Amino acid sequence: MTGSRLRSRRLALGLTQADLAARADVSRQLVAAVEAGRNTPAVDAAIRIAHGLDTTADALFAPEPDVAVVPALGAAIPEGALVRVGRVGELLVAAELAEHGTAGAGWARPDGTVVDGRVRLLAGARPADTVVAGCDPALGLAAALLDDAGPRSLLAIDAPTGHAVAALAHGTVHGITVHERPEAMPAAPVPVVRRHLARWEVGLAVPVTAGLATIGDVVAAGIPVVQRGPAASSQQAFLRALAEAGHADAPPGPLASGHLEAARCAAIIGAGAVTTAPAASAFGLAFIPLEVHSVEIWIDERWATLPGVLALNDVLDGDPLADRLRAVGGYDLTATGRGA
Image (cartoon, rainbow, N blue to C red):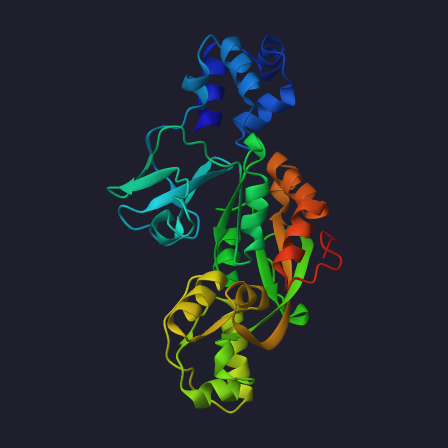
């Protein structure tokens, strides 16, 4: 790991952190943060630090080509999968790219691929220094706004609320997004700094031409419903609504990993989908609301001052993200960024 290599080299030369900081014309706090895995220096600072240690920046900071990487969400990543990689303390964590990196119009940018159960980092890979998991697509938009932010870059991992909370408990992410009814938010597994992001409706996306207005209409019509896994808050809302309407069993249908995937699948096959109002709108589907959920961002208190976390806070407080979410539609941004 970068921090371990830096510390080992410094100690081998008999230098204190203050000695190295003076040689490299950087702050001692930066040296300490890099060694602790809380920061990656900018290119110019990395070069000066390397010169101060009589070595090269590549020797200190280039990722190893074949490294042991912890799956950010716990489950093993399939052989051959393309992954994005981030650094959480002394851990390198990885998340599989959706649809083998083909979800957009062009190839996504992978950092590595899984070979023989290990992640082989690709040329030019630079792990993100902030890792946040959750199922709100706004997280991916925030990551895009930070894409060129260097050490402040964000790896956004698509994950249902339950899996995101588990990852936060295991220390494989810096933070998560969660959504639930305001009175039913899950308990945080570690001390966190909480920020309100938005409110949106969860429910059923349905074909516009189907003329369906209630969950009972959907069941009676017999159309398949694209659903989410049991750890997803939207799936739990769907099951509650079914029970309240007197239906014991969920309709059959394929399983989707996220809100956008569910809506996309429904639009393609003419089905219903358990998703959110913004996702339904994005694919030209009608929407049957079931519950209003609050969306929050939780950051592990240990990482509250991480440069990437501070950059994310700036994005939450700024106009670029808010303007884009208003353009998407379906987001109630009242009090966005407020401490929850």
